[in-house]
Image (cartoon, rainbow, N blue to C red; front, side, top):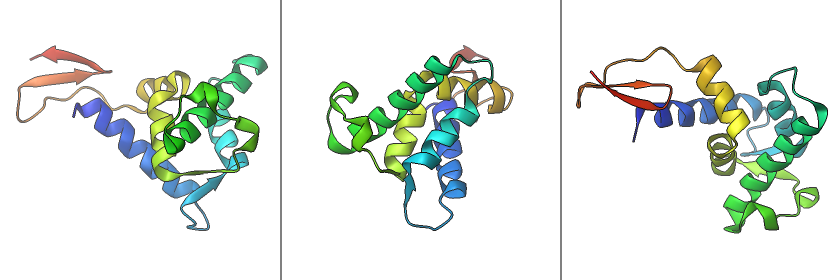
Length: 125
């Protein structure tokens, strides 16, 4: 598993843990919507923000039901479990890109293969 993917997964898992204040193992829809709005650029147009939130919820619910996100009734989604949240963080470009550009630490050498991971691109060292 590439270092960037491991890092994104860890960030998503940690973020879920910090948002799950009741330790219920699920985040209410409004908490997920607030998270998405917080990690996209503040200059994002309202419609793009709404589309990103809808895509995130659809991907999360589609992961659980094993159906394409396009077939998910987002209005019926009430909460999101941790595995679905992580999958949606990794699969929603605007959310994933924010984490990669804002939170990803500088490239480092991998111990086992002598390659550096730079923002999702493998670079021979």
